Image (cartoon, rainbow, N blue to C red):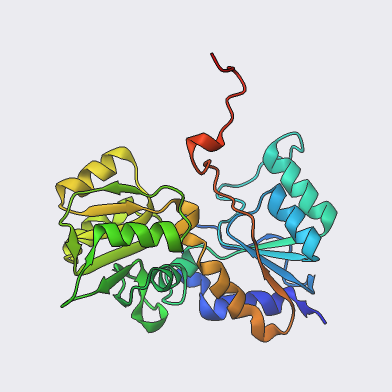
Length: 275
């Protein structure tokens, strides 16, 4: 059985309309078009040569990715560059790519809903509402635990065990017990003031820069960095679920595309022997 690329795109955009995407974003077809024939979909966070190899192994002819291949116009296709080689290999393998990015961030059933569910938290409101978003949702999530609370230590363990983050980073700027927790998969720096304004004392996000972490501490917010990849990976299962009504096989990628090593002990020092 197979369906058209149009049917796949339409199903994704039914759940996460492209109008919700940020103006700087590049969602939609990256390689391919509505007329492609799709018999098997691989859902992945990123597209690289390892993910393409996985697509070929499982027989997928379309990769639905969260992160776009292109954020800037491509002026030249040079196969000697990593990006150029990837594009050439995708075309050679006849594998299309469709990206659903910040539009998936903005819906309740998207990135942050999946992150909250995985961490055992219940979203009650978005951190930043987006006009016309389904369920009046938007970016991020505010999770209410009152009258009970959860400790920073417990949340760190959940990030480590449930998201598989090898080593979560913690900026201990707030209290040790939290009744209101904010979540945002990916890069959360621009939402720090919204976190404070919502009365949240803990913020679980993918990553922050050094000075942003200092700002969080000054605001009295404890930040738990889960890693960009690990904070967004839970949405892949949901995206696969969105496509199930199409009646074709959908596989969730098992390739960890985080560019960071799990820990320093996993890196072999090739330049120096034991002294």
